Length: 218
Image (cartoon, rainbow, N blue to C red; front, side, top):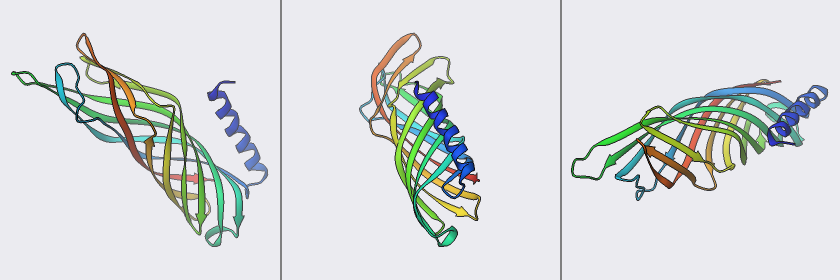
């Protein structure tokens, strides 16, 4: 069974079980803004280009969420408990990349890089009153990286597992506000082509980001 099919079946099962006992399992949606950026080492060189820099820009994300109560005492703002939170999140984000020539006639080339990912974070969260603190791995199911400059081509071999740390606040029984930090355990390998020359095939950068969202649970 493929990973994609497994996670789809997981969410169908969670949704069905949640309908049977909403006190144990909740299902919902969330979406908001996000930003990811690639931090390159200062020693990064792209052929004749050096001084490689990047700057993250605002994007967005939408997705499905679930909460499976493993242990709990009390309810609502007076309760506390331990939860498993598997999710499916689609994210579209961008960052700007600029490279400066090291030759006598110094010039620069740059591009806007657009990333589209389908992530499956599986967080373990602890709830105290209306506050939830969570941490867990994030599995990357799909990923696409596109350069907006036709003269710059970029492809990434991204780690399949990252991590997510965050906190959320319950607003009543059905609404939430969520903030998270997203990171990678390993650096991302990239191949960058400027013009017809493929360079920087062994370039590695550290991908990180954050997100803020609002959601509804049932």
